[in-house]
Length: 184
Image (cartoon, rainbow, N blue to C red; front, side):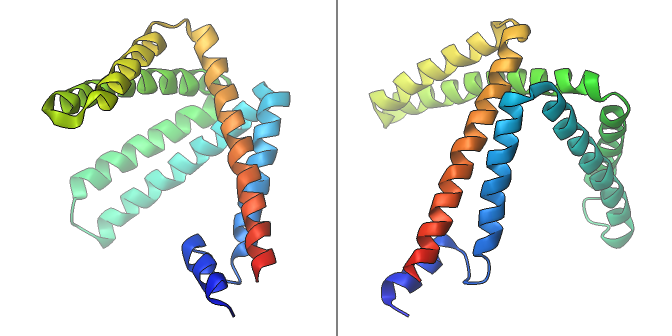
């Protein structure tokens, strides 16, 4: 095995027997991205339902963890109860959740944009230069835009942006795996 191959393997984090996992992840990303673009409502309801089931099961495991690990018991109790309640709410009302979860994402991204923008501006005034300041102003503007946006426009936009992101990262993962495999 050449030095370049060893370096490529260590840089990718994939052992010679794990390449197929990254390939499957890339293929799944492409499929979900295409489904979100072509059959948005059904795919979104299905994905949100899976999230609900995952949160429900995770909540149960958090409560079980209380009996195994007594450290941070308050956090385990809180996250277990919230996980179970959120999971049940989503599974019982998947259509409602398919609107509420992306809308919540829009609000979270809006608040994050404002907070990150403020931090960037503070860093700029502390000697970080103009770059962080300009990016901070843009980030605050994007956050305000998201918070003030009509959810009927913002939610589908976020869904299509996620679909595009899944397509791009899926294709990149597939290309990367085949490049990595061809170097061996």
